Amino acid sequence: MRILALLPAQEPPAYLRSMAAAGHEVHVVTTVRRRENPRTVDGVQVWPLGYWWRARQAARPDVVVTVAGDRQAERITPNLRRVPRLVLPHTDADFGEFEEACIRRLPVHQQAQARVTVPDDPLAGEPVKVVAWIHFGVPYRRAGSETMLQTMMRALRDVGMGVLVVCSSMPEAPPSWEVDGVPYLHLGPHAAELLFRSMRPQVMVTHHNYAARATGLAREIGARSVLLMHSDLDYAATSMQAGPDMIVYNTEWVRASLATRYLEVHRTPSLIVHPPVVPGEHRAGATGERVTLVNLSSDKGVDTWRAVARALPRLPFLGVMGAHGIQVTAPLAPNMRVIRQTSDMRGDVWAHTRVLLVPSVYESYGMAAAEGLASGVPVIAHPTAGLREALGDAATFIDRDDHQAWVDAAAGLYSDGPRRAKATAAALARSVFLAEQAHTELKVWAGTIEGLTRGVTEQHGALAVAAAG
Image 1: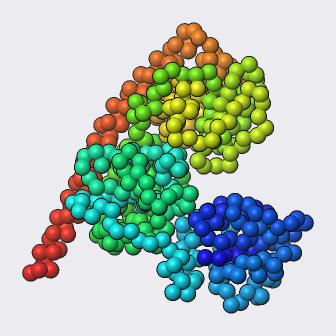
Image 2 (image 1 turned 180 degrees about the vertical axis):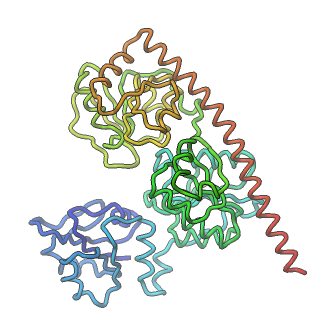
C-alpha cells in the first residue's frame, strides 16, 4: 500500500515509521514551511512543502492522509480528488488502527492483498483456549504491563490450558514467536479479529489499546472477557465501560482509587494480581558498581538521575533506555553510561547495579524496582502509591524534586557499612515476600480462569443440545 501523508510536522510520526517498517511505501509532505531538501527518515520519504507535487508523482498514492484543520493540506488536496482520503483528528495515531483505516479505503479487491493472511487456528485440538489481544508484547516491548501479561499467560499454560497472545501494533515483530512456551502472533486488527472468530476461545484477556474492541468481540463470539487494569488514570479506566466479565487490578490502591470514581469497579467481579516477579529469573550472581535508572524519560526521573550523577562524579552511573516515553540520552557526563532496552535485565543491568534510583512521577506498581530487590539492590524511590505497595519498607522514599536528599541517600547506600547492609537485607526479605505473594495470586488467577472456561464450555454444550432438539 502506498501512502501520501500531508502533516503539520517536521518528522514522520511513529505510526508512519511503523507503516514503513511493516512494508508499506510511505511519503510525508511537511506542511510547515521550512527550507530543506527531501530526505529519508526510518524508511519514510519526507518532502518539504515546496516539493509536494514531486511527492505526489513519486508516491502514486493509494491513500492520502491529512489532519483536520491543516489549511495547507486543505489547499493541496483538491488536486488529489481521485485518491481516497483519511482525515485524522490529530497527528498521533495507533499503528494497528491507522493501518486498518487506510486498508478500508482501498478498493475491495486490493484490501485482501494489503492485509496479513489469517493463519490456521494455532490451538486447534486444545479443549481450552485462552487468548490475549494486545498492542505490544515481549520481548520486543518489555514494559511492566507486557511483562505482567506474559507471566500471567505462562501461569495458565503451566496448568494445562491452551494459550495464545496476539499483538496488533508491533510491526518490528516477526509473524510468530514464542516466549517461555507461550506462543505469540503479530496480526493486524482485522486479521486478528477474523482469527478469533474462527478459533472460538473460551476466554479473551486484554488491556490498553485493544481493550474495548476485544471485550466487544468476546461478547459477540460467546467468550468471557478479562480486562487487566494497570493504573488508575482516567484514559485507561474508560476500558471498564466496555463491560468486561472480569477486571484484574495490579494493586489494591488502583482498585481503591478507581472505586471512588467508577461504578464499574463495584459492578464487575475482580481480582488483585500484583505484577508477578519470580526472583530466580532476575537475581544476579553478584551486583555491580553503578547507580542505575531504568527508562530515561522525564516522567521516570531522568533529571533526578542526572543531578545525582553530576553531584557524585566519582561514582559510575548506568541509564537503561525504556520501552515508553521520550528517552533523554544526551548529553552524557564522563561517569554516565547508557544502554538500550534489553531482554537480559539480569546480565545487562542487575549484575552491574549497586544502587537503583526510581524517581518516577507516577508508578502504579514498579516492576523494575521489584526485580532489583531480587539481587539485594538498595532502592531509592519517589513515594508514589504504587511504589509504596510494591516496596513496603525495603526502600528509601524521597521526593523526586529534593535532589540533594537523593545525592546524600545514593552516596550513603553506595558505601559498604551498616546502612547498606540493612538495605540489602530488607531488599532480599521483601523479594521473598513478593515471590510468595505472586505464587498465591497466580494460583488464584489460574483457578478463576479455569472456572470461566468451564462456564463457557457448559453454556456452549447446552446451546448445542437445544439446537439438536
